[in-house]
Image (cartoon, rainbow, N blue to C red; front, side, top):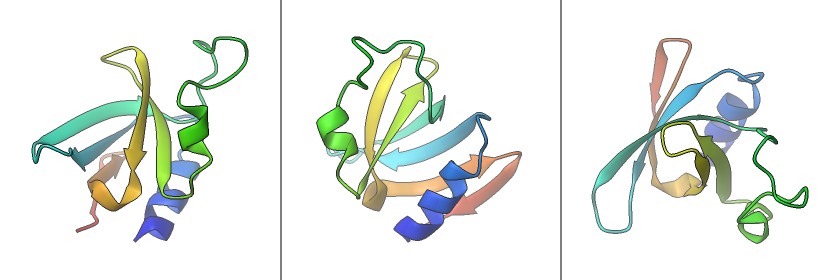
Length: 89
């Protein structure tokens, strides 16, 4: 499951994608963002950088909230890239 998410997000080549995530409180959140954004770094380090080193986490720049979000790959419900949606669960 995480391999599919890894390959999908890494192959976006800077394009936007949407991720549906199940949050800890049980609600579903849609995040529209990108990976690899470096514009809003402080000191050249991604916020939640210690979390980014964990293999089960994905750091995404959320365009709506204008900030980085660390997503647990096991909580991803669906990923939509180029109008193609892949349901993970």
